[in-house]
Image (tube, rainbow, N blue to C red; front, side, top):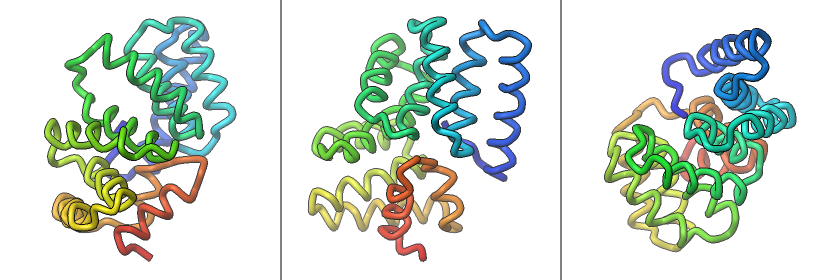
Length: 194
């Protein structure tokens, strides 16, 4: 789920709004799912997982729950379960407005699971859908490099900088708020960011 501008302020605003919503209506599955995502963005992964599971227990058939919870699981290190959830969500809503983001996250999850070949067609589709999506270019670069496709990785890195010339470690950390901090570190290293 992209947050641009002042990313830490945006994540804080998301977290506060959804915290208030869940306190006012604990049975609201959408609020629970978005609160989980906000918690993951600020690094509170255990609580994020608890709220994601609560949202899913309340309504596991809502694409508005499956998407945020899929990202929460991804960021929290539950890549396989996240991909199952995101695949289900995309079957329910094949033309979802954020399809590119979900595909890119699934591709990165496959890389984390040691199967980058499964991720490559997903991130390729994501780039066709949204060629200006910086996360997709970065994920494509990492998957390509991991498969030894260094020219494709160089092109993806160049495209990432074309989309966002001010790429820096803070932005990478905000875009990829994974519990496993080696993920954003490896991405920053691939992009030549110190």
